[in-house]
Image (tube, rainbow, N blue to C red):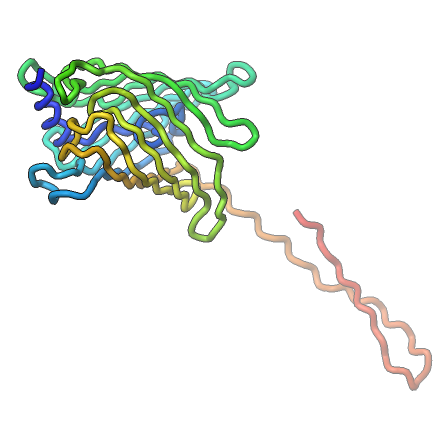
Length: 300
């Protein structure tokens, strides 16, 4: 058992924690699905203080870059497909998919629902070597917080490959657990360079390399570009690069909408002020007086 655990540490030192379907912070603990034909590009880093990258015990994951996109044109049933490249690593490709029903589509106050799979790798694990076939199934239920906004979600996961889900202390297989997430209502900033901030956090339980609690802040520069940053606390530090309990993450997300929003309507031109007829002078000695009436157009 300890030999397998040691292989698990080596495997995850070479690979970041998981492929990135739509997530809350650390885990896909949300029913959010990318809109139809709207690509979502991600660039995620996880790191901590210690030896430089490439050295023994270096507390850093490979950079995760990827793309996720909605592929169904329907409102009531949505599907996203995606991939990630974890570089540098020898088998960098991981795949993911998520199918879901948005909130309030089936009946009033219905929570949104989603099922999916992530961490689907291209290298198969054997009795003697570990691959990248993490293959985690999951399901989530989520509802927005009434009146104020934000959401709360709850669900769970189950990994189809048990060899990659061994506790680092040799205590056995931990390939199932709880996933839950939270995002706060919008904190509107409305500055030219920062639209809003959201507080986010989630948890994925299990004494394995995926078990963690994370939380931080989303900074939305526009409604299509955001930066997420904060700490991740691991539930099994022995499964992490450098044996670290904490990592810091910085994640850049960009949506590429297929249709540009319509340009703002140009304001209606203001007609010139109408000039009233001059009243006749009461006496030749009085100055000539004129009254100007301005016309104000209705606001659109």
